[in-house]
Amino acid sequence: MNLLIPNLGSTSLKYQILEMPSEAVLAKGRLERVANYGEAIQSIRTGETAIDAIALKAVHAGPKYRGTFVVDCGVVDALRQFLPAAPAHNAIYLTAIEAFQAAMPETPIVAAFEPEFHATMPEHARLYGVPAQWLDEGVARYGFHGASHQYMSERAAAMLGRPVKLISCHLGGSSSMCAIDRGRSVDTTMGFSPQSGLENATRHGDLDVFAVLYMMERHGWSPEEVRKQLAKGGGLSGLSGVPGGDLRDIEAAGTREAELALAVFAYQVKKTIGAYAAAMGGLDAIAFTGGIGENSARLRAACLTGLEFLGVALDAERNEKQSGDRVVSADGSKVSVLALATNEELIVARRAYRLLAAAAVAAL
Image 1 (tube, rainbow, N blue to C red):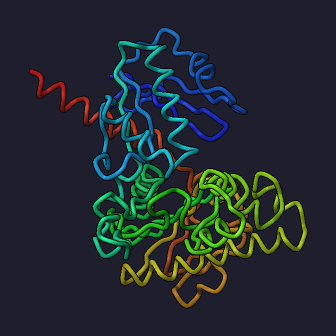
Image 2 (cartoon, rainbow, N blue to C red; image 1 turned 90 degrees about the vertical axis):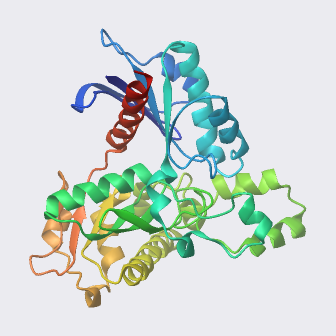
């Protein structure tokens, strides 16, 4: 079975064609500075390779869709319903579904939703203290970056030779962390929306909701105005004053505001590592991935400074090495620290293949 796996970012489109279940990569490509996803999808070249299905990493469609599903009207309606909770993400995937249906009308589309990996979170970690009606309407902690965190869990266990109590740090333009107890997600920083948790490039992280209400009432702002401000002008960009909030630009800026943004980000990561070690009753490994996590030795060091009491000992020379999946902790470190490249497309392909293979068997 040949699966086309597009990974749609805010301005980019990566894709792979995988033969399943062998997981052989038949083709791959990347499009940058994407302004029109319909046009970008039309430009994907599959050559002579027949595509049996398209599998998308989807984000948020509420409580009924914490798994992997063949796209139908119900999936599309749920994506639209939860568009206000994930405007930057759901809008892209709704556009992509429409574009793929037009370009490849006979090809089934599978949506692998990011909260699937976090479905193992216990209720005491998942629930908010909100009115009962809110809970009934799906307000709870969903968690996102599920494909990445799942891959990190599996990759770390393979490298270390055993299932571990792991803290996965997916740090990039969009950032989140996950406490993974021997393969099971038990807590994560993103909650009802991808806006919450750590600071992102231009999206705010955790924020007292009454601060939002205060600013809305004070200035007469509409929900749409506030949504735009917090999604486009918050996060590392808002703290640093660097448009776009790209860590490389912030590190190069050298201003007091830029240095403060880095300090805020590193502090939140470090604080969360301590909290998640407590939640799991111990810690075996910390894994960093994403554009920041995998590539910024400076940020990894800043996030881990002061965690020696947990048994974390970073090797400065290994930490500076910038190639391949590697252990960057010292030989005597009780907690292993890894820098890894994630592979969300592979997790999406596995989920989609299981769903489609099971449906084929059931149809016999």
